[in-house]
Amino acid sequence: MNIEQKTNSSTSTDIAAMQCYAQPNICLYNADNKDVMSELQDNSVDVILTDPPYLYLKNQKLEREFDEQLFFNECKRILKQDGFIVLFGRGTSFYRWNTILDELGFNFKEEIIWQKQPTSPAMAIGRIHETISIFSKGEGVINRIRVPFFEKYKHEPEKILEVVKRISTTFGNRDTFRQLKQYYENGKLEYYSSHNGHGVSLSADNMKTVNRTVQFARGLEEGITEQTIIKETRDHYNTFHPTQKPVRLLERLLALVVPKDKPREQITVLDPFGGSFSTMEAVYNMGMKGISCEIDEEYFEAGKKRIENLPPIQTKLFD
Image 1 (tube, rainbow, N blue to C red):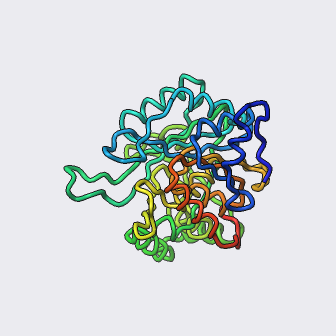
Image 2: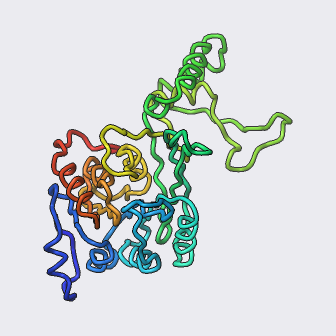
Image 3: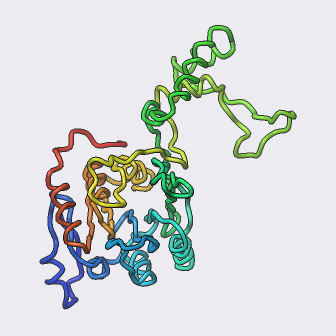
């Protein structure tokens, strides 16, 4: 793995000594991210996907304060033009980070909600989500990604039942049957104008639609377009970090923002707050290059072992 670093700094040798190639294309550092990021070349990273300390948890060693302005300045410097930063967060700090990115000239692209299991039942209100912001340094375009139907609705059996019922009624409607037959024979979708219940056309973005049964059939065949609420559960039995994220969630987020016109092996993803290195596992699974830092030695060693023990990749996801 050839990660370009600055060579004119007095700390270059020290940083190089800290790195660990846990896999051929995954480079890990047991170091403060400000030291590692200062050594990376300008415009050298395609995507930054990270989960900084939210700074509201009490008595947690992972809640380390950091120089926010310096951090986001460095993010802007090392990101390539039209590259993306994907940021988990919650509470006051998260809204402050969004403001900093806006003031630095980043363009807000999307907000994703990760729906997860409820937190402790002892809490006054169950927290079942985290928020994710997507910003671009420039005019980056979010990819249109389709998620396999049964993966998308694995937590919603009622949705699967609705699709089965809808398609089972096709033979009672000749026009729907014709459109469904047309789709299966040549992949053609028949669009028509959409109106509300009062016969008034909807907004320009929603003027054209497709027969709902045909949409369901297409979803079964081609997958469902990714949505702004992503349901992925944590594997509590195999986690060693309090804020460890599901790898599949991170894969789905990366699929939205990695360059589509660039070979995967040439794409570099940075996670400056590595934690358990879940982002690096997602990067590995998708056949890309990854750089990550974790300042805590205990978490670093556990995460390093995790990445070193990953099995060989059989197929790349979202190709």
